Amino acid sequence: MNAQSNHPITDTTDPQFLGPEAGQQAEGQAGGGQAHELGDMRTILQAALTQPGVMNQAYRAFHNYSIGNQMLAALQLFGKGLPLAPIASFNAWREKGRFVKKGEKAISLFMPISVKRRADKDAPAESVEAGEGGTFSMFMLRPNWFSLNQTEGDEFTAESITPAWDAVTAMAALDIIEEPFEHLQGNHLGYARARSIGLNPMNPLKHKTRIHEMAHVVLGHTAIAEMHDDEILTRQIEEAEAEGVAYLLCALLDLPGQAESRFYIQGWLQGAALPEKSAKRIFGAADRIMKAGQPVQH
Image (cartoon, rainbow, N blue to C red; front, side):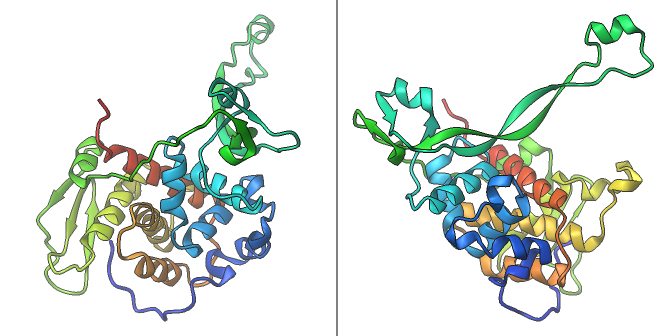
């Protein structure tokens, strides 16, 4: 439920914003530290929250990639002292008539890798030999991409992309319904239950709250009964996750409410560390909601 919270407003650029561990990792970020290259999503989220404008710039440069990879690419290019520009693999640049300059090092992004699942140790020997454990996909960092500025060759003009998103389209794709607001008393700005959301008509930032409540649904917060016991989250983490999604999309779409969103997250965390798993969930939900609301390409 996205209600106003009475918490002190403090500096959200403080490296402790996402908890002590994320703060320690973030201290070396300005000079292109290595924390983000290790795939720590809390560090990547920290950068998104404390570097205004980067989300929107990263989307324009890397719109074909996931939101997490967009930020990861931006951080690594900044660390190299390079501007944000299109990225591609060594072979993809060669197909465009451009070649990676000698001595240039690739940046790493997450990509799906098929991993062979171990067969049950009690399975018959013939099953193990036949590889009947099956396979599954997991995301791993791979250094396969180079920026336009790391290449030379034929002239290349990048496609200009402006972030586009429509709430009605997104809710329809995600099977979420916006119903008339029922909490007419108190300071509630919105709520989510099952697959429905409600927004206070007096809410000055309806777009942000709408994304926040949609995130509750997409993250599974409204279906606790269907979650396993070890997956049940505290309300503080649920609210921080949902507002993290709202912040990422407001920043990506360059919408108002970003400062309020940062304060909201900090108020719910109250100095506690945001789990790495939650940071991953935030980026995953933001991707789903963003893609669900984008116009269909013909």
